[in-house]
Length: 175
Image (tube, rainbow, N blue to C red):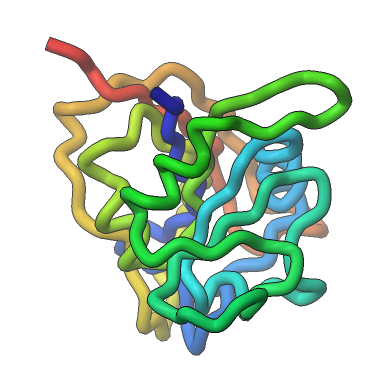
């Protein structure tokens, strides 16, 4: 079975987006996202794929979860009608630089996060220490007692980052 990780930048009120765009522009978050996901499979909903400025992300297996039946609807990406079907397809893994990975990273949006949360093994969070004035998309609530913090790196605001933030990895506790 694939290891399923969720990657998300999340405000203190769980806000993640506004008008199909990220609320925060954090260069270090984008760098971390690239480090985490390169060489692996990424899964996303249609709107998230459409929000990518240059389409499919390079050096990753891009999978879009959408009910569209249009062949090649998402250039550079595979399409499956459900998270379950996408995860089945991802079992075969992805080969990058002669290394095979079966790790899957869920990268949005809110409804895909909602579906993936019960089966995720790990949450790779960027907590932004702020509450935005406006947001229309939120990360689903989750029970923090089901998760164990395995990594934390705190950052102050600086010339490139308007808000303090923390990189936090949570792994699901297994009883």
